[in-house]
Each structure stands twice: as C-alpha cells, then as structure tokens.
Image (cartoon, rainbow, N blue to C red; front, side, top):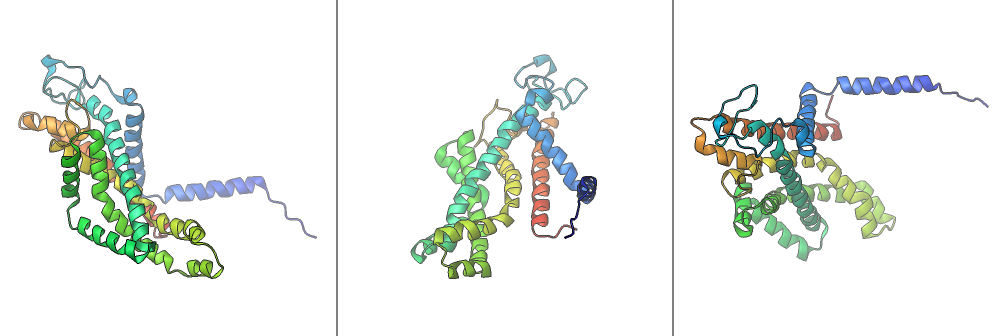
Length: 291
C-alpha cells in the first residue's frame, strides 16, 4: 500500500500562485471600478469619515465659491460644501438604487418564472402584460408610477423598480425556458422528482446564475433613473443631498456655478460605470469568456 504525503507548504504555495495569477489577469478597468465602488460604499456607510464639512451648514459669505483647497468641489448658493453634500448624499442615492433593484428583481422573478413555467392560463396573460409594459420607455413607466404615488424617496424606489422589472422578467423567462428544456431537468422528471424539487434544485439555480451580473448592472442603472427623476422634481426634494436633488437645486445657477451640475453628474456617472463594469466582468467570468 502506497501512502502519498502532501506537503502543506506546497499546497500554500499553489494557492498563492493561483491567487497571484487571478489578480494579475483582472483588467485594470475592473480594479479601478472596484476601488470607485468601495469609495462610494464607504461614503454610504460612514460619510462622516470622508466628508470635510457638515452637509447642511450654511455660509452666505462663501456662497457660490468655485473649487478651492477649503471647499474641494465648491459651494452652493447658500455656502454649503458641495463635496460633503455629495458624500452624504451617497447613502440615499445608493439605497434607492439597491432598493429599486430589489423591487425589480422580486417582481421579475415572480413574473418571469410564472410566464415560463406556469400553466397556459397564467403564462399567456403575463406574457401579454410584459409585452405591453416593454412598449413603454423605462423612464416614462417610472414617471407614471411617481405621478400615482407622489414624489418621495420611497415612491422613487418603487417607481424605478417597477419601471425596470419588465425587462428583467423577460430575461428570466427566456433563461428559465432554456433550462426547462435541458437534459438534466428531463432526467430529473424521469427519476420521479416532484415539481417543487425540480424547480428548487435545478431550474431556479441554473436559470438565475447567469443573471447574477444583473444585480450589479441594475444598481448603477437604477441610480441613474432615480437621479433623473429627482432632477425633474419628481423624486427626493431639496435640501436633501441626494444626487438628483443636488442637480435639481443647482440648475438655477448653472451659468455662474458650473460645478453644481458637473460634480454631482460625475458622481452619478462614476457609480453607473463602476457597477456596470463589475457586473460585466462577473457575467464574463460566469460565461467562461474572460481570458
């Protein structure tokens, strides 16, 4: 009988080598996106650690001051520090994005799986409803629900979530139909597994796994939609430092204080791009396309 002894040091070296290989092969754009996302996550969790001023303290003598060493991104029309307001507004903006994504995915899971796996009398009406909702632009659909619910952070979250849910529902439906016709699902049926068992063990995990990247992609998209609605005056209202509200309050002074629109807009773009890049990388890894 031959006994093979594994050297722990070799095992540790092998793990380190694999980790080093993985780190070196992650694109620079993905690492940059991760650092940007981490900055905003820290800003949302502990804004006082990053902010240089209170977001609500006013100083009329410093009103509409351009970027300086004391006010890194300038001040607004009543002297509030713009950088600090962007940092403190991160929490509300990201929570709206996360909440909207949760609402969208929850509705999409129910509608998508029902349309793919439900009986015909359930699946057909859902498919027709999804086709009707998809005919409306996402922003227009969200505007409709904001008008019904009224402007607020909670209604903004729900409206953006409902507005984006139909697109995700169609993706989940298509993936569920693909998995439903696969060989391993047919084998499970042949072995006498129950409908619940087949769904929980085979269809749901395999249908949803390729869509994990949608979570990261959807967060950035939801932040953009929510900020757009706030900019139109249909979301969170000033003096909240939510990014869309910052854009809305700064538009009156755009000709004399460009920083009031540029820097909140850059924050929105950075969040959208970073989460989109991370989501795209996750999707490529899941599909085995990353070199």
